[in-house]
Length: 182
Image 1 (cartoon, helix red, strand yellow):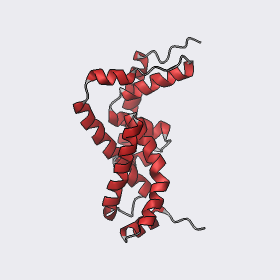
Image 2: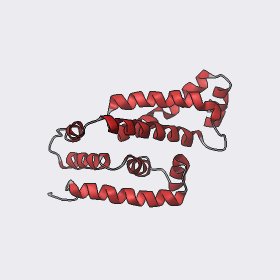
Image 3: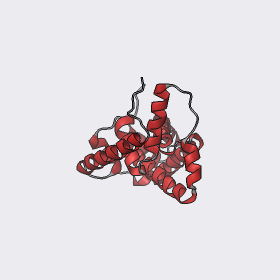
Image 4: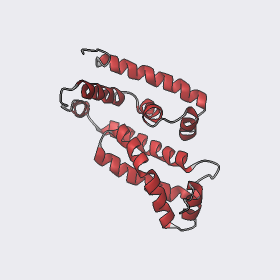
């Protein structure tokens, strides 16, 4: 069985093939969901946003530029949709509600505690910094891929990622992440 590349599938979608779009969804749904869940930290919201992202992608498929990869294009839609959601959520959500979400009870296991502190630290970092950290360290993207997705020069990616790491380090220090009680 010959597997079509993303650009072939996009071309077919533009020309009316719904089944080709279903293939793209199958290919990228898990990746998109994983990005969104790490940014919003709520499974139900992540599912809803993932669905919205693919609806937007389908609606904008005609504007796809074949010089770029579909992978970068769908990531860009994912990032924009999620950041817009987070911005709108910040305007509505009270500080008390956020604090309650931050302190979910987790069994007392050192690695689980460190993981909780890391998630808390990431949550307290600006959304654009959190995104860079996730793309680099959770999804293993290169600077070049990140630059393509974020539509900014590689040099800026490196500078912003440096700042993002510093902000995360500050948050982790606040939460005693680096204390080893073993």
